[in-house]
Amino acid sequence: MTAEPDALAVVNQLRDLAADPMNRRAIVQDQGCLPGLILFLDHTNPQVVYSALLAIRYLAECRANREKLKGELGMMLSLQNVVQKPTTPGETKLLASEIYELLQASGGAESEPAEEAVSSRRKAQFFLGSSNKRAKTVVLHIDGLDDPSRRSLCEEALLKIRGVISFTFMMTVKRCIVRIRSDLKAEALASAIASTQVMTAQQVVKGENGDEVLIPFPAEGSLEVEQNVDLPDYLPEDESPSQEPDKAVTRVGNGQDGNSWLGAATNFLSRSFYW
Image 1 (tube, rainbow, N blue to C red):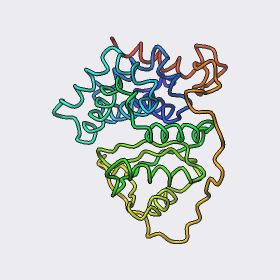
Image 2: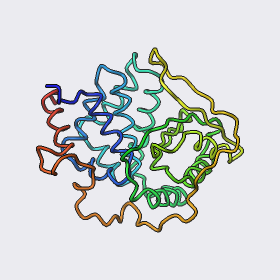
Image 3: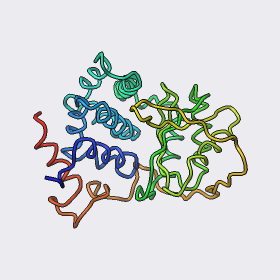
């Protein structure tokens, strides 16, 4: 029984896998992951709900996933329930609302502004080939992250840092969730954002009582930041050379169904919930 993962461990692992753009198509196509994430949206633990929302938000970064996410049985209704539930924390409501609006608008993806499409493609090129092993997640609150132009500035600054694996924005709450190498300091992210001269960052951490606390970074000094001088010319995400998307997600064991991580997660979900 001790080897059985609990709900928070499972959803956190799914969230971390979804943070890597290389995994997003495979997670959405897996028959157990989306139903499991939807069930997690009704979990009694607020941390489980929030992690599930982050995972879904990561998956929705891939435009090709949005119709599948929108059409998954119970997805839109569960997002509405999170927003309307009186006990849902404010930040969780905002994230659920952002995802709902993003998926509702997915039918009009063809009308997406050209510059946003170019930005998404550039990010996909940068992230391909990145590994999420020995990585950590940093949540930033960014003062000045007010509109798409500021977001583009922030993207450009983060893309220059060697060691950034992936990032996603929560514009409604001025947040950016960044996956970075474990040896990269969070101060490097703050320094890059401050270099825009119109934005500053604080780190979001959990306090002892579970509340979120904003931690300011030291004043910008002589921190050396290793930069990506020449970004590799990777294929865009929609043209990934992987022909077997079910093998794109990092797995544990010898790859057989019983030993794969997704298999273990799916078994856990099927034994723990009723659909």
